[in-house]
Image 1: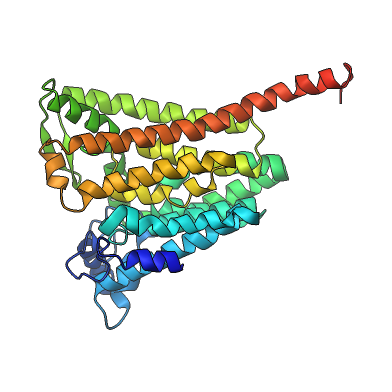
Image 2 (image 1 turned 180 degrees about the vertical axis):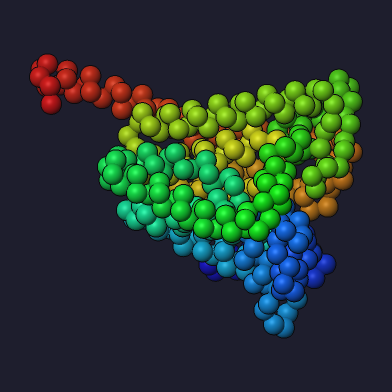
Length: 394
């Protein structure tokens, strides 16, 4: 916590700067609407899922300081919670790794607390800690809340169910599946009933977005532009700057297929491996990495989703994993502080974006490789056991 507090006070973070507002004006608008009795998805458009609403309401009703200050403070508390929960998930002598999360403001800069992404990251970290500590029903309830806040934690659901099936049996797996469905429905369905079109459109926006300029596919095309082999056409839609044209559309489809393949691979490697706590922690990081790095959008705040998960990587691989993540955070800070317009213009800064994206690809390959090797070891061990036992079955 001390490290997080010291890092948040650094000049590059601009925690106390009232002009460093990020997306908080939009959050404040949502909060004001709610405070005046308007309902999201029916009376006004809210691009975020219903589970994000507390991040708009709480800073709006707190007295004294500005909405931006309270919003940043709330995100700081969520980050501190991520540290505690990561330590709980790690257990034992390696809990100190969780302290590395406190370096996030130093590495990522002023984006860190001006988005609400530490909120779903906190809920996700709580779910991961609960499941490895044997609280599977609480874990699936927390995971449902995380999905209701921002959809990405849904990629962890198959991993959680596989882990519970191995550790607690099929009956418990059915129970926790029902818990997840009930909690998610309890959060989402009331808003869907009040404004079905608004909720559907909010979800549709997330899935129909084109290739955003910071994504892996877009950074490859912008690098080709720097080499004179591609002419970008940038359009501002869905609240971001994106590449248009047939090549960009085709690459968006291709990277989405790669994303789905990578996710399935992580699930399969975990399903056919040991399915113990160490493998689960590594698989959680790999699954979210697959979702982030191969997706059509890779905004700077998406890096926060990885922060509580990468320090949990099993074995000695956590060191190179932490190094790759730190490098990706620093590179993200380079253009997200004040040079995003250069990315949109296709200037030389796009090489930094590409380097960041390739570091994330390497990080995914590292974590997926750990799972793949564990699967191969688990399939080879029965044969080794039969050999060592002079041909007798265990």
